[in-house]
Image (cartoon, rainbow, N blue to C red; front, side, top):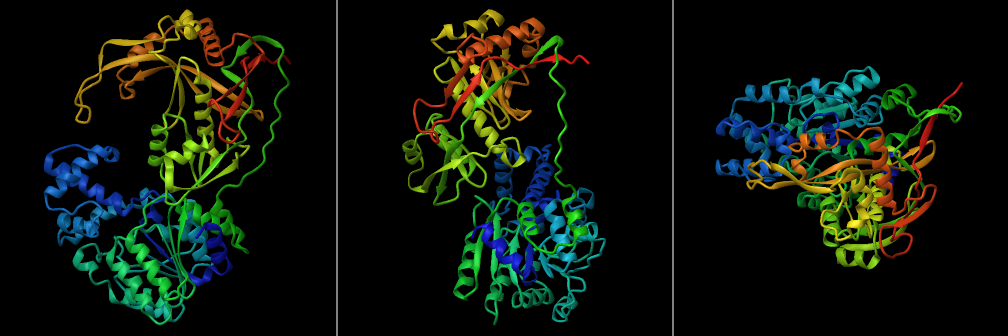
Length: 587
């Protein structure tokens, strides 16, 4: 089910739905998920046993993860993603020492770490205004209580393992709102983390959830489904007399893997006549904000607390064009026209960024791809069909948004910059490279067209070479030392100023391999030490001649990324060859 249909169902009667929150709902507030906690436990245990120092940032490295995981499994810990992984780590590391476990969770879930996101504030407002009457969670933290307090100035007490017997009574008496922590609260003594705990959920809290499942529809978000005790509880609801009367909706991140236990639960629910659907979302925040926007009769004060800021139109008139000296030259070329269309690809299965990068590599750069809610592409249709095969369900023409500078269109900006680089490099002695944040054109050190770089040579001399005496450091992940090479390069980006689109060119130096860039800092500083004023001006001229293949000022050059293709297949640009400049304003 798409988000639009789900939004219409919930917003018609939000009081008909109970929420079930997993750790993903608190992650948006800066707190770790269950997976984050597991890896923190693995890191701590590994460092303690092997006398190593590994930071939380190091854990993001896949090679570091693989090494730690292999060590943990050699010590009898479960395999990664095993159903009992979370509980087993707590059992093996903390044993029966509940106080040490509580202190660990208190530190890692400290309120000092909490920074409420818009999704947290929306849920707090819905609870405080009676739009959400019942919320269940597996989380130990205080994010929901804090959200209600910040948005509405109200207090919210959670039912947890201590005092759990009154939760079901409160539900029967309709003493809303009801906020229930199924696994406990780290601020109290009772927690459920160990296998022996989770085999039997607290009976009173379990009865409360089943009772709620017979009164409300359920929205499950931020939760993977790995906790067998919780999944058993949801199945128990299905065996009751009136399971999920208003539906069961499981929200998961677009492109992420859906666990078989989740698919089985939804299938079982449908067999019982429940409207059960999986709803792909971008983030917890995006989902809640979408719902909030579409709920009528919102409390104005709470709405102000939810949004925190409002878009305001700002129109500051620019001063008149200057006429005085000096003239300041800028590194921006006017983009007179840019692509208006591309292709939107639909697939029979979820496609992630690794799939897109692989497709680009397999076609040797003949496809340019990006994704957000949809996968967008430039390239010949037959190439698209060939690389994705049966996974591809359709190709449609798509109009590009006019405002590529808005926050929601940043992926479009990168998409256009990659296409711009491909167009500027085509048929020239240049290499095109993109990183997560930038796009580059690099003087090809192996080109046979040496004349194409003459203007650059006249300014800086050699355009590429090997850095004498510099080798990449040997590390655990790169055991072989390599020579470090360099080449003249230019960073390429697009930006909108004064309502006009500009191509920004920023001369730079490219280092191979890229991981050696820090080691080559002294070399780059020395090579760029005299690039001021006249020399930098000459260098800009040289790069304009190289990338536009002209030395004429005030001319317009049309370039395209590929040799052929329709407008939606082959992005084309028209660029002016004269850089922007400014004059001193004379009053």
